[in-house]
Image (cartoon, rainbow, N blue to C red):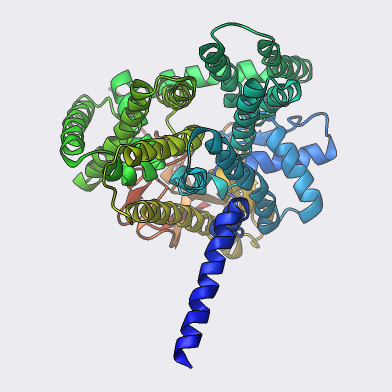
Length: 572
């Protein structure tokens, strides 16, 4: 009986494999759900409260999304001044909340749809640009930047979904001279820009591709006026509502904050390479399959020497602000390691243009270099979210190079593709898990503070923002306004350690203090200034994620007492 049972199991496995091969879109759907469903209960953190509060405002006043006041930088400010993102994702959140409520699971479930649309769109785009589109889609999914971003309710993955499908319809419309596909692509570009302003970069990208492909202007160019008209209407509407155009304000903010950080272009470029290598780590794991051993080793050696030199100069001149306060050679090794990965991504892109020099190669190259230059030198700071648009283009480039090597007769390790993809996926899942654990620890710390101090007769104030503010304020605590809040002896003040815009009280005004800790991530961190993890902003840390010993999330609670007069100074 053993032999027939064994044959039946093998036949069933073969049938399942054939079904997956014949139904790639369903296969990708199942893989996306398997990767993201475990994170549906992730608490809200970092910038998500801004989107949630705006969505609540939209439910009450749909035509005035930013017409409320928020304490986000330590003092109450109009939301129209605080926000640097357009409201389309917030409208989507408001609609999702009408259906699922304001709980984490329901809203994250709603954001599975943009993630799935982005991956399926990548697969459809890859069908036009390479022969293994499913591999390109899987490589995109398992980029650490994609998985971490897809476990949030921020605007990035929604923008990417519109972006990818706009490129798909534009390429199909140009090849078929299809009026409606080009028009739909123009509308999708506008929606991408209203989800996140970076989506407007599709206009010059697709204009450049079309000029390279057709070598002249045509009626296609008129469709690129659609997103510009949509942005103009948005600018005008926000000017009338809030007294200043929000798109222009976001641009001014990016340039002004970029200047405040004070990074030289050399150091900013290093940070851009480091984040590119870490956020798009799948490309690094594929490198041994695409380059011969000696050229790859020589390339890595040159990049290591250059990165080490820049890092040394930056530290010695104190010009590398992200590394100040972060100690330990292990962090510096990780910086150099992922810098090699980032340089490899750019080298891969240059090799594509040098080898093929067709319109599709130029599209991918401009796509990748545009995102890299924007993130490194023009955005307010280097961060993973700004590098997310690169993921589909880099994945397609990997597959195109792999296919070219196979056609050229280069021997490829049969299991190398699976192992490289699995390594990238494992790292991406570890990063997403660490971000999940961080958000969970932040929520737990807020609840712990409220359980211990929130039911006292005296008020409970807090500083800090992000998820800590969202959950503690929902429980009933009050944010401390650094300019106008009036506190009295006996009041409690909670200040989280891993947070921003903090101003601890004068020790003379403190009657008692207690520190509460909650364990967070253990082996890997995406957001912790102490060890240099700064996925959401490189000013927080020089790496998108860091392996190492991660300190727990801590909150110090102060019981305020009477002000002790300063000792009198003797006259001179």
